[in-house]
Picture (cartoon, rainbow, N blue to C red):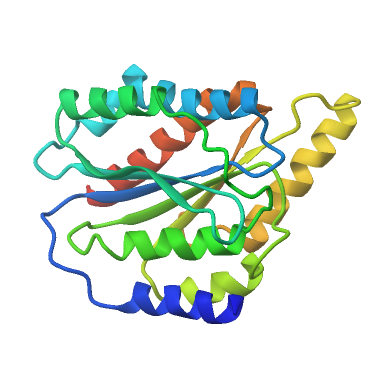
Length: 238
């Protein structure tokens, strides 16, 4: 059943999308709300995203070409059936549009019914399906935040090859442990998870893994990641 569901999602990714207004980048941000993420960490993650989007540097990068804006979508994920859109496709073509997005994210409350598992492969396929809807965008990027390895549904290593022809980039934002037993243990855990994302999750020539040192460092890591993605796009157009 899980394999059939994944096949259906991948088939939708390959289907022709309706023509869209031109945009320079379609950007999907996927937030981890699995059982390892508690209520405090959830607030740090959603608030950190809002903070990063509102930073002066990211704001300037997003506003650089309003005639061909970035289109943004945010969804959260956990178990195989638990992908939920928090922000539908939104064109960031003005300061007002960006402010509305930030305010909406800041007011988002965690839903209670999501299952605690970590279905990373399904999140990858779902993000690709969403990006397939933006045919008018020059570049399509999926960012997946996560604090652990997949333990439900198709493995990322089996999902990734099926997405290689979709014309998308997948980047990862790895969230390290907040309270490690020691500095060495902390570095080892972050290194292992970063290597896992690098090997099994990220996709594309410019793909990369960013690291947040705990959920307290999520806002800074998200800002670094967004600036790198937006700068890569700008450089490729020169």
